[in-house]
Length: 218
Image (cartoon, rainbow, N blue to C red; front, side):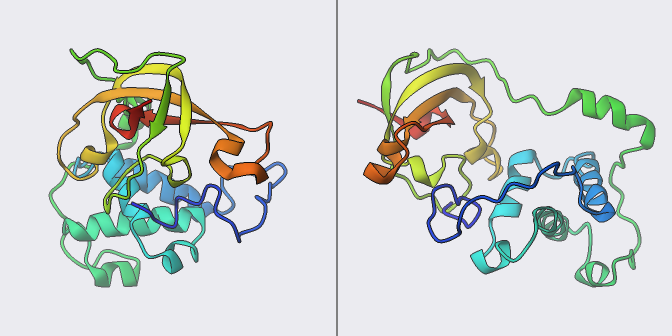
């Protein structure tokens, strides 16, 4: 979707301000939000793509008013509320008010194994790759109302296949509960002037990971 999260190349927000020696967390509550997000994978009520969509699928004024981990917290609140794992009054109170739900819980001694396992997305496929390294392709001009990982600023532009990564879970369908539908995943390199015209930096080269259905042959 064309959400406020997809801000690459959008004018009017000024330059990116780098924070020297940026810490992983700016406050203790941010550390807890990350831990809660990881722990809530244990009940298996949603997948990583659904969690990304829950963070990104919100009005621009809401998204842009929140810090990074405030968005993470808002996303997990939405997912839990949609599945009846938490009630609005509990979110408001910041504590459990209703009987505990009967769902699997991540225990402390299970954390190292879960982190080592991660969430691999590589899948087997019988279909050959449609593109090869060096092929020129055009990113599709698309504006789906649902989840996508194709950045808005590359849509309609021409790039060159740089790498093949094998077949991976397709996030657009996975986020919507429509199955993994694995596709070939490529890294595509775009010239800065191709993306932003004559005002673009002629020395810039932007690499984007793109699933096969995002691309058209030239």
